[in-house]
Length: 386
Image 1: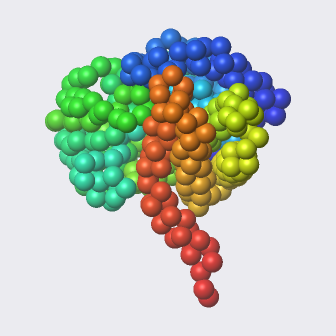
Image 2 (image 1 turned 30 degrees about the horizontal axis):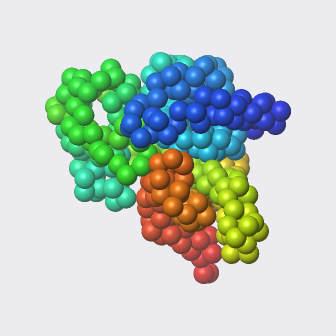
């Protein structure tokens, strides 16, 4: 998706989202998070800003932003409440799949509705026995005349309840194929059921579900990109995960930033032995390391986004950004809790939320162990011995 957003427009959008976070998100984030309640009114405001059309071309009603601006927006949202960025992640991957691989008819029919936030997008890839092992997908798509019959179970589907479009990976006779499934929001729709809502340590307020397909019939034109793309779904979806990993890296950067800003503010307010704890060398060392990790995470994330914007393969760079930024988020959240002392372990301060949210980025969009494999294989291919 080679594109470049006007810098002035990018800065204006970032300022708009930052203002939204300060005014509308921060005052209620902890309340909604602790109640594990879906923030409907915040999502409506995100629609008004146009965030659901971030990466959709203008001809379909979107903002047509570049990946770098998208990453900056995700950082702002995540610094306020990381769950809000999860509303956009799989939605944007659906938009990108349609933009990159969809037929003209699929783009015209689905992208305007996705851009407006009229329907939400979800990604249905992982299975109980096929998480990172995407080649082992067992969900079946059996051809029957001009339809396919879908059967199987998918795990870790973010937005599964509320999604109106689901990018589903299923095994057709030609191989793993991506289907763009349209459904009405809700727990059950003609053979698609939300079989379980998955409870989580953090990442509250946004549903993560198990979805079951039982003899669900879809027309043949549901195949992403048409019949010539039968068997190419794994390649298509893995390409979309590069953007997903930029999203995760940007989310992690936002959490790392929130943890650092909470820590440096508290360190100047809290006094021990007659002075602010920020004057103790031990605390200063922690703050220096936190700020350094944050800056490095942001730069790696922006570097990966620029590769995506240039239309270049970004698997290594996105993997590096996701790996480093997610580890930085967990380390910063841990250090912020230590700097806060006992207060960091209470629900009175948002630090405990950062501590619970940060691990998601270490395992989401491929665990960090998988990222190391992706990075190493990519490097070996680039530096292949002649």
